[in-house]
Image 1 (cartoon, rainbow, N blue to C red):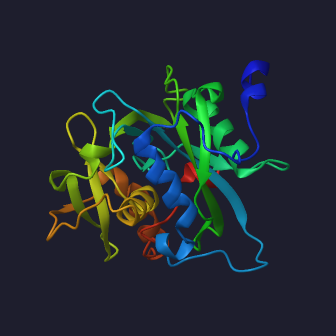
Image 2: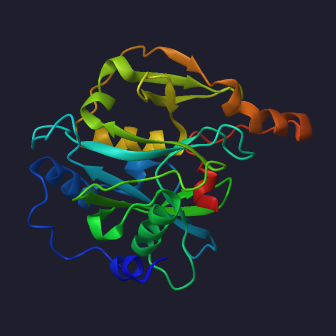
Length: 265
C-alpha cells in the first residue's frame, strides 16, 4: 500500500458527523445509531466466544442519477461481484471487506480491504457510522459493517479478475423499486429476499449483503413491502459450490445471511 494511502486510513468513527454530509444520508446515520443487532439478524456473537472478526464497507455516494433528499434514498451504494468461476461463493455480490488483521480496528480494516480489492482511495471516504456486529454461525465470523460517504468518488478497478467479476454502483432509489425486488430460491430448501442489479438487471443480489440491505433499508422506512415478489432460482454458476458440497457429503442448508468468502479471507 502506498504511504499516502496508508496515511489516509482512520481507526474509528469520528465523534461528529461530517459537516457536509448530504441530507439524504442523515437518516442513515441516525438509523445506524438506533438499530440493534437483532433488527438485522437472529444471529449475534455469543458473549466471550472466540470468533473470527471481519469488516465490510458500506460506501454511499451522491451518485449520478439522484442527489437524494431527507425523505428517501438517493445516491448509490458500491458493491462487488465475485468471479463466476471461483471455488467459494462464485458470483456472489458483496460489500468490499475482509478479515481484521491483528492490531486493526473494524474501520481501518474495511478501508484497507476496499483499497486492496478495488482501489477505493480512503482519502476520498468519510466514515460516519457502524452497524452492530453480526455473527455468521456456519463460519463463526463476526462482521462489522462500516458506513461511509464517498465524498469524492474516484476511479475504481478490478484489481484481480480471478476474484472480482464486476464492480457495481447501485442507485438506492432504483434498488428499492418493487420492479427489482425478488425472492431468491435456493435448492437447499429456503427462500430469501433479493434484488436485481446491473445494467441489464440480471445480476442477483442476495445472501449476507442482500439481507443487510433489506433489513436496514426497511428499518429506515425506505423499503416498502412487496406482495408476492417474483421467485428467481440462482444461476448455475452461483450453485457450483453447493453442488460440490452435495456430492461430497450431502450438503447443508446455507444460511441466507451466510458471509462471502471475501470477508472470511
